[in-house]
Each structure stands twice: as structure tokens, then as C-alpha cells.
Image (cartoon, rainbow, N blue to C red):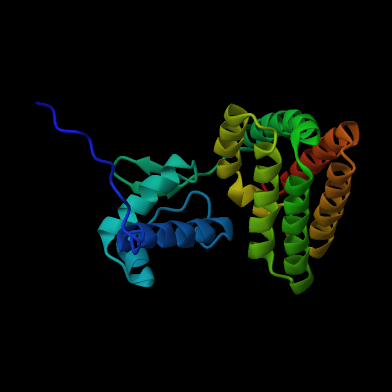
Length: 227
């Protein structure tokens, strides 16, 4: 006789296990080091040194490095271990062109599909980003900036589009960060975002598409000398 199936009831005090929390913290810490250039493109990760710096053993560090490799920020090279991914100029240009195509498609769908509360949430993210800009906090500004791009695409309602966009955006973390290096470049990027959020609030797809294209074209112009 088959016993009846029983649904598992989640304990009221259940919390995420500590290992997962530590993994997230390690991933974020090493990712930030790559974004800010503390671990520059082409650099080999010395697990012993980095583990000692972070106060962790090699096992959780290696798991974090594998995750960052899946994001496209590192390469796992036989005989060398983890190496910070270094992109060529042509490869970066190609990725930015594809990113532009994805974001323009998303822009039209978002203007049509987003609710008023969705747009209000985007505005809140933008305002938070501007507060970081006013304080000169580049890393937190950057993280809000990327969250806005991610949310803009997610609001299109196209899950495959969002997943494809994220896979490219994750590889461009470092290059997008250096794209607003220096007061002039940063101010220009901020002005472009100001115009974009206004177009979203106006639900003007044609204007938003034009602004997104210009923003990503200008991103390339801001970084091409560096790469």
C-alpha cells in the first residue's frame, strides 16, 4: 500500500545556511576587486595570498572563483589556475553592440508593459544612484547603475532576453565601471541616465531607444582608449 505523500512544512525559524552566505560574501568581495581593478585584467589569482587576505581557506575561495568564471570575469587555465579575463577591443565592441540591440528591444517592450509601480521602482533606483553620485561613491553608484539596466530589461517581460542580457552584462562589469572614470566622463554618463529615466516615465519608446543607443555608443567611446 502506498503511503500518502506529506508536504514538508518549512520551520518558522529556518534561515539560509552560513556556507551559502559566506559564498555570496566571497563572490561579491572578489568581484568588487576585479571591477575596481585591484585584480587587473590578465592577473593570475594567487589562492594562498588572496585567501589569507580575506581570512578564508582555499576551498570556499575556489568555489567562489568557479562561480566568477561562470560569470565570465575569470578564466580557469590548466596549470595556472584562475586568471582575470582580459578582453580585446574588438570583442568588447562586439559585446556592447549586442547589449545595445538587447536593451533597445527591451526598451520598447518595457514602455508598453511596465506598470506605474514598476516605473516608480526604477525612479527610486535612479534616485539612489544619484545620491551615490553626489557623495562620489563610484562603486555603489556603479552597482545601482547596473541594477537599473538589469531592471529595465527585466520589465520587458521577456525572460530569455533578460537572461541573455545578464550573461553579457556580467562580462562587462569591469569595463562599464571604468567607463565613468574621471569627472567629465562620469558627469556625461549621469546626464544620459537622467534623460533615459525621463523617457521611461513619459513612456516614450522612440526617445528611449535613441537614448539607449547613444548611451552604449558613448560607453564605447569612453573606454576605447583604455582598451
